[in-house]
Each structure stands twice: as C-alpha cells, then as structure tokens.
Amino acid sequence: MAKQRVKYSKLDVTENDVGDELESVSLMHDGSSDDDVELYKQTNNTSEPTFTAEEGVEAIGFGFFQIRLYIICGLFTAADSLEMMLLAVISPVLRCEWQLEQLHVAFITTVVFIGMCLMAPMWGFMGDKFGRQKTLYMVAFWIGYFGLLTSFSPSYVWILILRGLVGGGMAGSPQSFALLTEYLPSKYRAKLLNVGSISWAFGTMFEIVLASLVIPTLGWRWLLVLSAIPSFVIVALLKFLPESARYLVAAGRKEDAMVVLKKAAKLNNRTLPEGTVVNDHITERGNPRDLFSPMYLRTTFMVWLLWFGTALSYYGMVLASAEILQLRNVHESGEKCKCNLLKKDDYNSMIFSTLGEFIALPLNIFLIDLVGRRWTGAINLFGCGLFFVLLQLPVPQTVLTVFIFLVRGFSSGMFNFVYIYTSEVYPTTIRTLGIGVASSFARLGAMITPFLAQVLLDASLTAAVWVYGCIGFTCAICAVCLPIETKGRELPQTICIEDD
Image (tube, rainbow, N blue to C red; front, side):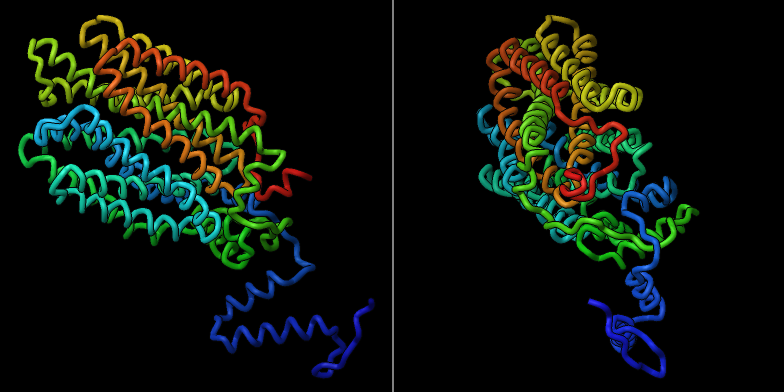
C-alpha cells in the first residue's frame, strides 16, 4: 500500500515522518538530552548505513578499553581462585582442630561444588536475560558476604552451610569471562584470553603465601576474613565495567550499545564503522532449548563431558597436592595419626607446583591458533592424564613436585581450553547460559574429586591416579571429535545467523 501524503507544518511529508518527529519531541519532553535525541534519530534513520556488533568490536580493536576490562575481570578471577585454593590449605587445619574423619574433610570441598552446581544455570540464565554487569554485582557481593560469614562458623555443620553458599556465588564467576570475550577482536581473542588466565594462577599463589603467614600466627578464621576482602573491592570496581555491547544489541537496546561502543572507540583512539549498530535477527535470549538445537546438540553433550573431566582433574590436583605431601609427612614420621599440619617445605612445594599453571600460557598461545582449539585441548588433556599416572612412582620430593607442577600446568591449560571454546561456540543469546550449564557439569566432577583426591588417594595412591589418568585420556579423544572448530570464527550473535 502506498504511503498517504499529508500536510504538516507547510511541508509535504509522509505519515511516518510525522511519527518520527513526534517521537523526537516526546523524547525532549521526557527530559532527554540533545545528544540522546540525536542518537535516537540516527538509530531510527533507515536510510543510514548499519553495522553489526561483531563489526563494531572488530573496529575498536585492542587498547586501553580492553586493558581496563582485563584488570577488573582479572581481579574477579583472582578473588575466585582465592576462595577455591582456600579449601586445600584449611582442610588439614580443620581435620586436626575438630578431629574430623577424612570423609568429613572431603565433604567440605564437595559442598562448595554442590552450591556451584545448583546455582550455575541460574547465573547463566540471568546473564543472558538481564545482562552480564548486573549479574556480576550480585555474584561479587554474594561471594564476599558469605565468605566473611564463614569465618564465624561455630561448628562443622555451619562450615558446610556457609561454604555451600559461597560456592553458589562462585558459580556466577564465568560471567566476567564471557563479558571479556565479547569485547575482544577475533584475531587476538584466544591468545588474549589465555594470557588472562594468569590472574587465576596469581590468585592461587597469593592464597598459599597468605596461608603460610596467617594460619601459624592468626589462625584459619583470619585467613577466611582476608580472603573475602577482594570480593568487596570488586563490587566497588564494577561500576567501571561496561555492559556487553553484544548483549545490548541482542536485547534490542541498540542506543545503549552505540553509547558503549563509542566510548570504547574513543578510549582506543579508533573509529566505529559509519552508521548505527543493528541486530539482523531478533530471537529469545537465555532459552535452554537452543542448547539442544540440531546445530548444537552434539556439541553441547561433548562440552559437558569436557567440563566434567577438566574440573575433576584440576581440582583433584589442587586437593591432592596437599594430601600427597601430608602422606609423605606421615610416612617419614612413622606415626599413624594423620593430624600433621603442612610444613614450610610443603607450602614451598605447593607454591612451586602452582607456577606450573604458567607453562600452559606459552604452550596454548602457540598452539591455539596454529592447530586449533580442539587439538590444543586434546594435548592438554592427554598431558594431564599422563603426569597424573606418574605421581604413583616412588620418587624424591623434588621429582614429585615436578610431576605436580606439570599436572597443574596441563590442567590449567584444560580450563583455558573449555572456557575459550564454550564462549566461542555458542551465540550471544545463550552464551552465558551455555557456560553456566556446562559449569554445572564441571561442578559435578568437582563434587566427586574430593572423594578421589582425599578419600581414595588415602587408601590407594595408585588407584586414584589411574582414575584421573583414564579420565584425561578419554576427554582428549572427545576434544578431537568436537563437531565445530572455532578457530578463526566470528562470535555468533544468534542461532539464526548460524542457520543461514
């Protein structure tokens, strides 16, 4: 139907033109600034050129804007690792102070992962539905608040309840990784995300050093207090963390996305493409059914297996490192009582083995764009399984420390792989949901691993390391067989784009 011409202010215009002008006037009456009105006009000018969120992110490149994101997201990751490494260093203390059985000690770790498993899908849904930044505010405060309350635990039961709640908050930590991913240009994305994993390694090292200083002098309760403080600092810093432009576009908030992209381009001394940002396909956000669409069904199940094996192996080594060293103390002392606190040499061995996480950086940075994501993951998974098996050998503590060092390195590389691959393979509309649900399967592995790394290992070191070794080898095969290789691939915005 042809547009009807009407007279308006002595000008010959269409009814659509009148509607646009009236909406602009309405904006001014609502108290919007001239810049807001101009931005609205630009966005609604259908004759103006447009660009996608992907093209906008590529245009702003890498600069001060991403460095600021790295710092804030890196602190978030470090604070998360403090709370996680805390489990390994306070377990020997609580065993002695409260005369706990090995099974009870293992459950302190398991309950954290139960909380993570239950809450991870919810945080993922919230990130896709309401935004990454809002979700991170709640996550950071949650972790700090319940982490601080744990220091006042009067009994073993209260430790379980409060650490479980801390775990529930930690389940939302991948939101920061997803947000950082969505602002990195595709050419450098994998390399830069690998470098970002340094934050986790520094966080674990810091916690071990802090524990070696605080536990012998002030006690484990003060260690819990000091470990919770970084989460409150992050709450204050999150106001400098912008919302994801990709999320804003997917949510239909194109004006807000333009504002964020323009600020990012200005900080990086770059210019955006001419026109305004658009989303060619409007679809529902955070829909769990999309994870099982024909395009992603096989990928989803295989990713779940990889997250399960990765978390079981990584946290298994974190817990087993303290247990293996403690077993050596028992054998050397000849005492049957296992109430032996970690010694200075043991803390030094744990710090050195944590440095193994840094070896994953040059290896993965070199491999991830050379051979692709799938083979990089397979190499890390196989290496982790191999050196886990070697832990059963009767070797001096120096050689044992090297083996632990290498397991930590490859297991850290495994986590880099699953995070990068999962954030790249799913579209923006279900990205944090996909990570969140996969993270739940990781927590299932993490729930099981205390009974392997602490209970089974205490009964038979050989049996425990072979379980970890076989899981590593199986997941390596799974990584090679993944149906989608994300190397050199743009971050998809919606399911529709993939189907075209």
